[in-house]
Length: 145
Image (cartoon, rainbow, N blue to C red; front, side):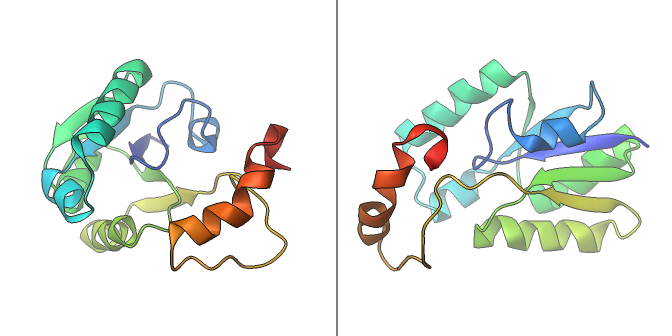
C-alpha cells in the first residue's frame, strides 16, 4: 500500500507519530497556503519559523490550496492512503473534509499525537491567557506531567 503524508503547521517535527505509522521512505508534503495563513493571522515571523522547520524536515513544499492540491498529489504518487496529523484546527478539518470528498477511494487517516499537557479538567479556551495560566505548570515539567 503506497502512503503519502500531508503535514501541516501544527505537526512540524520528525518525531510526530505520523512518521512511525507510515512505511519507511514515505514521502511527506506541505502545502504553503497564503490565503489560509492570512485568514489565520499567521504573521511573518511564524511563517519564517515554518519555512525554516520545513527545510530541516526534507519535505516537499507546494504552494496553493490543500483541498485542491492534495488530491492531485495523491493521484500523481499513486497513493492509496493519506496520513495526516490530527488537528483541532477548524480550517484544517474543513480542508480534510474537502479532500475526503475529492478522493473517496483513498483512505484518509488522521494520526493522533500525545497531548502537550494533561489538565485535571476541561480548560476555558475562550482566551489563550486563561488556558496558559492553567497549563503552564504541567507544560514546563518533563514529559508534560
